[in-house]
Length: 371
Image 1 (cartoon, helix red, strand yellow):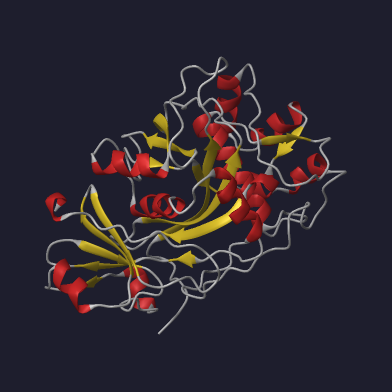
Image 2 (tube, rainbow, N blue to C red):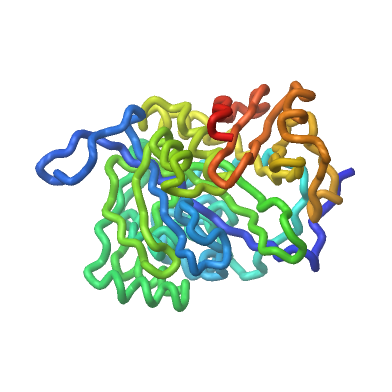
């Protein structure tokens, strides 16, 4: 049984986030403090949320946040002109959203000339990255469409703190900052990557419909945590982030852990970038994890798993069993799941392949010594 999300229970908000992957070379005179490059040749920007935050306090996440009306505003049109005009602003044709369940209520805007969702979400993600990390993913307005290339962040304005405070008070000031710098948000550097819906945990909880973008930059930009929403930051390769999580140096929510393990499939930044370009028209898969509570842990079931049910009752509920996790695993054969043994011990089990040429993470199974 499938159906739309119900209103009046969970509080749903639309959001966008950037998985920022930076090329990493050996330290040189310009950046002697950088650590040597990892095996993967790239690192990801992880921000540690303040412990004062109500949602995922203390977690390490990718930069991003909630979509605001200012991100969709027709006021952006003059800034993108004359080189980039609606409806696509130079973006590739809009890819399809590859998921039918669950059906989300329409959340568009009635504003005349408002931006399409895939443009607005990109502006949102870029704005939030500036607010949280002080990183400006902008492009000079005079820049014409060119051959695809790795992005570069602009240096922050001299009065970074003042601009960031203005944007935080009123997101419309991000447009004013871009106009002041004679730049546009570099929406063309953000590639469709994935989309996650917050799984149900408790009635009335905050839940998000989050679009994930991947942005490849040629070198790591300086990062300035805002020390309000974000307490700290680090650059980590997929293998380094996994080790930090397992050693309890950081905590990753399940979607971030899954995405980081997925990025471990790529041997270099150029491989990752080529994958993004080659799959630009494939669209993204939006997933609602369904939680199965076991006698000694919990499992997040993802589409394609044999226990995954497209049942509208599970939008506001979870499954439960008196069996232990190990019993459930022994009984199954077709897996697409994250097994949460404890706060810092996850396993990922995938036995199938994506129907839409996307990449899934390789199986990641923790040793019994960690259980």
